[in-house]
Length: 173
Image 1 (cartoon, one colour):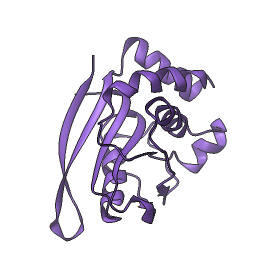
Image 2: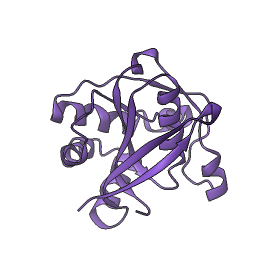
Image 3: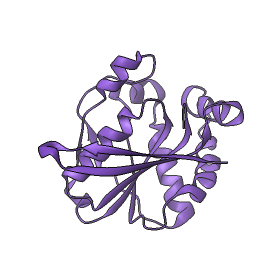
Image 4: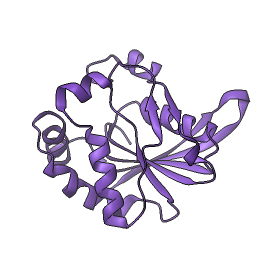
C-alpha cells in the first residue's frame, strides 16, 4: 500500500525544487470512508488511526511537521482543522516536532470546486521557523495537488531546505 509522485515546482525567480507527495493509498474504500468520517462526520478519532498509518510514509529526514490549513469557513463549520489533527497525531507517533508554519491568505476551500478552480490554488505564507528545516506538509486528500504545491512553495520561499507532502489518500497516483 502507498503511492507517491514527484513534481517539479517552479518558484519565484525561476528557481525549481522537487516535491515528493506520499499517500497511504488511493481515495477509495476504507481510506475514503475514514477521510469522509474525519472531515464531515466529526469522527476525530480517525485522525489518530490515520496518523499511525501515515507514520510509515514519513521521510526519515523530516525535521518538522506542519499542515496545509483549511479555509476559515471550513474551520468555522467543522470546529477543527482535520489536517492539523492529522499533523499533530503524526508528530506524536514519530516523535518529530510539529509547528503551525503556514497561514492561508484566502478563504476559499477546495471542496466542491472545479478542477480549474482547484488548480488556481490557495495562497499561503510561511513562518520564518521553516528556514533551514526539512518540512513535511500534511493534508488529508490530494486531488490536483494544488494545495500541497502552494504550501510547499511558500515554505521553500521561506528558506526551508526541503519540503515533502504526506497525505492519507490521493485521487490519482
